[in-house]
Amino acid sequence: DCCTPIKKLCWWHGAGSTADFQKIIQERCDTYTQTIRPGSRSRNCQAIRQAFMSTFISKDPCKATKEDYNSLINLAPPTVPCGQQVFWSKTKELAHEYVKRQRLMTLEDTLLGYLADGLSWCGEPGSSDLNIWSCPDWRKDCRTNYLSVFWEVLSERFAESACSTVRVVLNGSLENAFDSMSIFGRVEAPNLRPQVELEAWLVHDTGKPPSDSCSGSSIRKLKSILDGRNVKFRCMDNLSRDQFLQRS
Ligand code: N1C
Image (cartoon, rainbow, N blue to C red; front, top):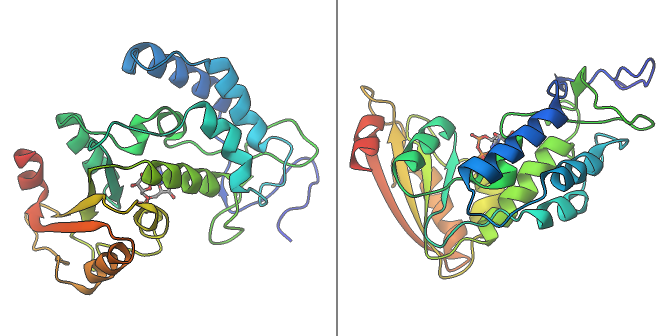
């Protein structure tokens, strides 16, 4: 057992909580609500920070449930205007560059996605502190850790709210551009509503040939998930990063 609560140290295999977690959440929330989206209905950042903390503080870091995050997510649901939604998998930086040039939004452009992006957090039973030493790793410790469950429920709600045409940016330099074990593959694609149309863009590194295409087996798998849900599908491939960003 890697987690002996001696001296409050719990040696999990993942990175510990981000230093100054609470302060970062509060500051990002203030920036988002005052500067980035001042038009969004006014939100109480202190209440959001407190709700975030109470989802995981003093709890077993391997026993996160979706329900733990309900009240936080209800304070700031990750919804975006119809037709502006962009999903990504293994293309985070590119997808963010793409939405910046268009009037489009990824999950990190919603309040909770913005607050949590790049941070790590977990607590421990019997303590009101964050564990700054280590947090459970998805593979080596437990899948039901607070970080993983957060991105899963937030992504699920984000996908459920999709309407009209939505896009996904996939990495055409991987052998399998669609990974059915990724959050996009196991959470977002299977939660799109019927009648939504998904446009997949397979983008490969500039100067290299693509490694996967719309007719490859990984994309056929994505298509079959969507067919089962009556989601329309279009796929564009053979675009280098430069071509993709220029046409957009
Ligand atoms: O597993 P992935 O990608 O397919 O997840 C990406 C997918 C996007 O469409 C987002 O809407 O799921 C959403 N999402 C995030 O927005 C996000 N921000 C940061 C999922 N995960 C997110 N993270 C962290 O990156 C999180 O720790 C998760 O495990 C990785 C997923 O990266 P990936 O495999 O490239």
